[in-house]
Length: 211
Image (cartoon, rainbow, N blue to C red):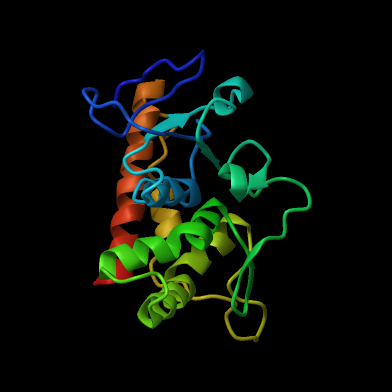
């Protein structure tokens, strides 16, 4: 993907250059993790942010001008579509009996997961199958991404595991970051790697959720 040169910070679009995205969603540039890669993938499936442009930047002036911001900015405010989890005092959890602190992916899933599931099942969000699958996908897939991103160990001595981790997806997405030995360390190459991370995380989310 080519850089679009938003402000002075690297940015890129996941949509075709011939299209004009309705919305722009921001996340940080530099090294990436599974949570923002998956969060960006999921939010682009929603009605509100369908096929949105992804802008990767840490510049507050760039981020302030966007329609949603994930994993950067130091603010969790769903009313303004701000979904960061790094700020001091952040303790948001999924609820429904789960106590793992959320990552940016977990925040997007908490607020938009039922919409995505209902659309795929072609039913209303209030359908009981939507709620059932909403909880099952969190338990069997999403919670591990939240926990790993927040540094929560799966095992604590001889106690039962704190969460289910069947995919090692966080590690596999992390390995897509540019190696320091690669000669091309450009923003364009970094954005290509992030796109690969989005594709990998998104494919597994869809596979786990709907197949």
